[in-house]
Image 1 (cartoon, rainbow, N blue to C red):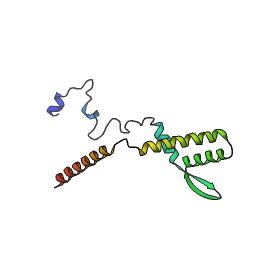
Image 2: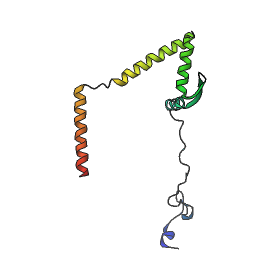
Image 3: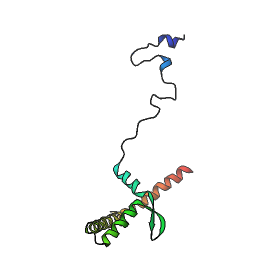
Image 4: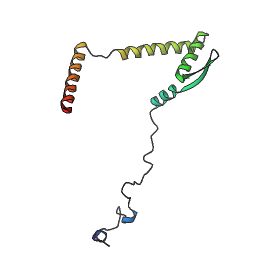
Length: 130
């Protein structure tokens, strides 16, 4: 035995050298399990999936959310009041969301300052590269 083996004391939290993890290996090779995730992301992921739809005798692939919206619009057009109300509410929400997205909340002066700052940062990057 070498000097290290003689001075190493086995005990609580100090397993024998032959039972310790080897370099590059862990005690949990599969890693930590994924959590339940985010319900919003899950809904978006499922809504974006494509399904095969027959429309006017023609097969085509559409996102699930598009199929649902088309079905609601068709039901509303047939006179289904709850479907019509839902379509109206969804249209109002979508309109509000698009308006919120188009309004940045920054004035022209703010945008000028941000653009000037971005140019200044680009100049620093170019100087570092030289």
